[in-house]
Amino acid sequence: MSTLESYLEGAWRAGGGEGVPVADAVTGELVTRVSGEGLDLAAAVAYARRTGLAALGELTFLQRAAVLKSAALALQERRQELYELSARAGATRRDAAVDVDGGIGTALVYASLARKGLPDHTLIVEDDPIPLGRGGTFAGRHVLTTPRGLSLQINAFNFPVWGMLEKLAPALLAGLPTIVKPATPTAYIAAHAVRIIADALPPGAIQLVAGSVPGLFDLLGGQDHIGFTGSAATAARLRSDPAVTRRSARFNAEADSLNCSVLGPDAVPGEPEFDLFADALVTEMTVKAGQKCTAIRRAFVPANLADAVCEAVAARLARVVVGAPDADGVTMGPLVGLAQREDVRAAVARLARAASVVCGDPDKVEVVGADAGRGAFLSPLLLRADDVDRPEPHDVEAFGPVCTLLPYRDAAGLNELIARGEGSLAGSVVSYDADFVRNVVLGAAAHHGRLLVLDRDSAGESTGHGTPMPQLVHGGPGRAGGGEEEGGLRAVHALLRRTALQGGPAMLDTITSKE
Image (cartoon, rainbow, N blue to C red; front, side, top):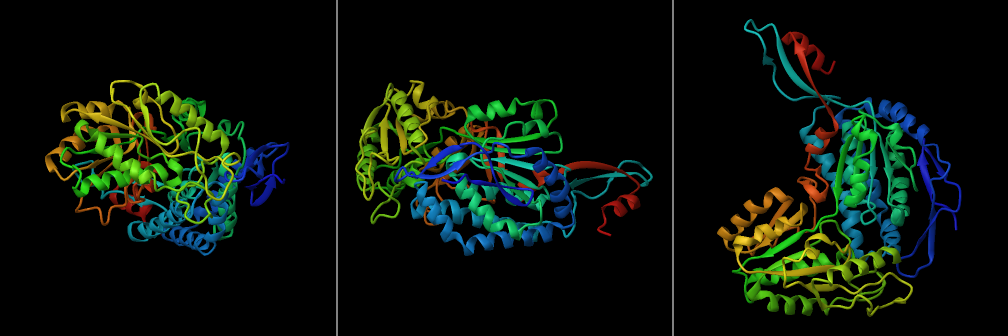
């Protein structure tokens, strides 16, 4: 089996050594090997700073937007290839659409936002001249320009296409060349996406390194940006690197979190919100086999409704068909690999110290179209923890099709329970009681990057609990990484360097004019 090639300095190159084997999540067969051994990362960084910066620097924001749109359309034309590769990583057609179509859509949204909201220029003037003297001959204003560095993105395995494009789009618009470091289990999908778009981008605008990147952080400094998606533990380790702590490379982390959904006391069986809540839990448990950083991990429900919610969710989970993504009737595929499945099982065992399994079996699953012993299949698991003060449900994340139901007695202690997650990417409140919703949102907002209010009025157009939108910020405080991505043009501005200019008004106009 050949080694997956990296795209460096405009050419595809294979690393040396045996590499890390990557298996098909469904069959267990070897897909590829991933190795970065022997790759010249210093040359890649120099190429980005020299060739990539120069090529992107010649383009205005609007010209970069046109390039970004071309790359997205190239992916759109060949997305079937990405669907087929995604199936090998366990993704159903619905899962692949979230990643592939979601990534393409995100890039197209950014291209549109740039055309409407950025100047036909290489810098952004943020404000009108600010008088700094009484005579009107001395003023100041702020400008945003492209740093003289690169953007390094380190991505998680669960979204090899969307995770790359949601970082790449603002970086391209900001004029920053990008080096992509995909997670090993799905690196072959990200690499194929780069093969599709490489010719649509200026030279040096994108590079991809498959495998480990020893010494790469030693090459980074104050002009560079590092965007990380992954575990909180890895984020903490990277954040402590001298590239960040001493040389002040910008660092943004989007990490795992114990996202929650809250059912209001008014949402009793028979009310639309009760069904919306149960449907949302099952969706978040089964899309991507629960391998989403925004998935619902803690479900807070009124104690008097806990039994009814368990029954409703269990009935829906009974209709979930686990198996090979291309098999008829399958609605949930396997986890990305056997190692990930064992990690989830270990996390479930820790959760079981405080919770009982209401639905599913962590050690047994019925599988359609595949061999359960060879693939990374796992039953969707609903747990219930009646002792909500136990630490495990608020500390342990099972990154798979797992959710823990936690009954609450009254609204007074609910926000305290929510806060025990120590920072989340996404939360939701499902209720038609405006006062209840308001109290929860105002109490929980400080602990969340995004909050969704779901009710009968908004359900028809709602994008759901677990779906980040490119127009809105994605990130969260504390355990969730403390970072912020997307958010429309905020993401572009965040990559640029803000500089305060001082001088005569006429001179400032000359500096900031296009010619």
